[in-house]
Image (tube, rainbow, N blue to C red; front, side, top):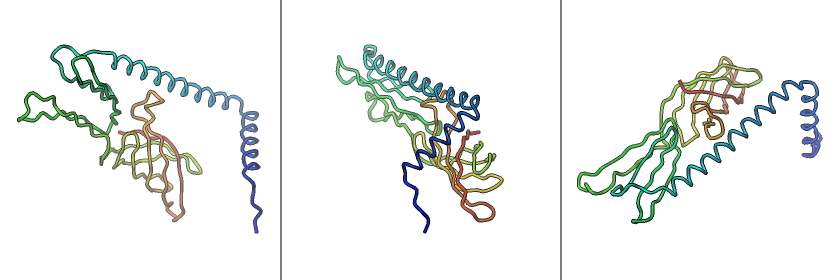
Length: 203
């Protein structure tokens, strides 16, 4: 019967491997750490910008006679509407690249503001491609067929295997609107289970 390794030993072994990598490859380790730091700083900057935008929108007033204003800016749909003569409500929603916005005005209600319908989930067809790692670096061609906000479901194929994958847009912490991180699972051409992780983009 194989001897079970305790979680503490596994953690210590992992830390030892990381330390060994830092010692053997100091330049590569510095590049990785610098990249992670830049990602963290960009994420913090976006969070602060979002807070500033929220405060500005909540403090803003609509022009006289205006009941509702809808602003679509890249991946945000900002809706402001007058709840009372002195109170303006505010809502900010994420708009995925696969989604869209509809303004629906009803004929029998000419004095009502148009209904704002945001589609941020559903089925789609977005061919794409990227690079994944599964025992070695592999090029992948794929197609996304379903999405929910930043997440997507896709089917992909590489020179070693094909299968299903899950992806996520990284536009909330990186300045790339069309870049996604993904994880794949499928069968190799010899019938073996393969797992992969990588990056993709939509064509």
